[in-house]
Length: 288
Image (cartoon, rainbow, N blue to C red; front, side, top):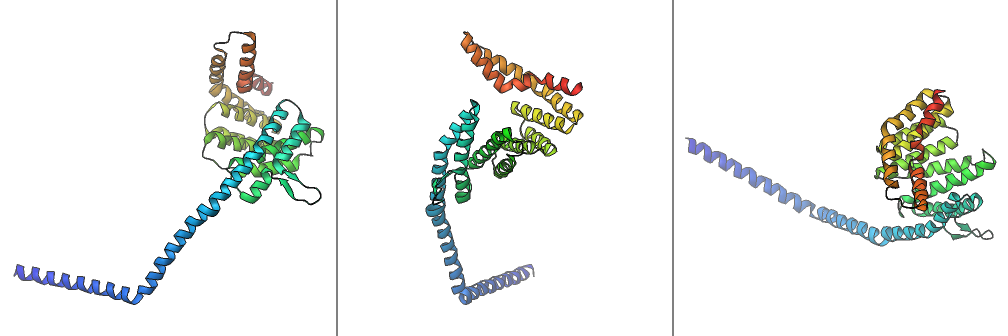
C-alpha cells in the first residue's frame, strides 16, 4: 500500500514537472521575439554606457583636469602674494584664477578660470575645483572689504556656494570645507550660522585642526554677545588640545642648533599652534 502511494506521488510530481516545462517552452515559443529584443536592447544599452564612459566622459574628465592644472599656478601665485601682504596683486591674481581672462572686445574666453571650468565640466576635473573657486571668491571679498565693509558681500555669497558644493570622504578636507562656509557666514555677519558651522567642522574629526575651529566658534559667539557659549568653546580647546599643541611645538623645536633654525621653528610652531597656545587670552577676555 505504501509503495503504491509513493508511486502515485512520484507520477504526480513527474506530471507537474512536465506541465511546467511545457508551459515554459510555450512561453518562449510565443514570446521569443520579444525576449530576443529585450536581450539585444540590454546589450546595446550596456555597450552605449561603456562607449559613453570611454569616449565622452573620460576625455571630458581629462580635459577638465588639464584646465584646472593650468589655473593652479595662478592660484598659487595669488596665495603667495596674499601671504606676503601684497593684497592688490593677490586680488588681481585671485580674480584671474576664478574668472579667467576674457577678450573685452569679443567677450571670448581667452583663458578659463575655475568658475568657467565648473560651468563647463562640473566636478569632472576633481572636487578640489570647488575649494579653489571658493577660496578665490572669499579672498577677493576680504580685500574688497578692507576699503568698504559691504563691498565683499557678493563675493562671500559666491564663495559660500562653491564651498557648499565641495564633497569628499576625507575628514580633514571635509572639515575644512565646512569651516570655510563658517568663514563666509562670519564675513556676512551671520555669526550664529558661523558658530554652528565651526562646531560642525570641529566635530568631523578630533585633531589639532578642530581646536582652530572651536576658537573661531568662540569668536563668533563673542560677536553675538554670548560670552557663556564663547567660554565653553575656549575651555574645550584648553581641556582637549592645549597639551597636544605644547607637545607638538616641543617636537618642532627639537634638534634646533642655530638662531636661524630657532626662528624658523618658532615661526612654524606659532603658525600651527599659536592660537591654541594662547587660549588663555580668549578665556580671560570673556571672563572679564
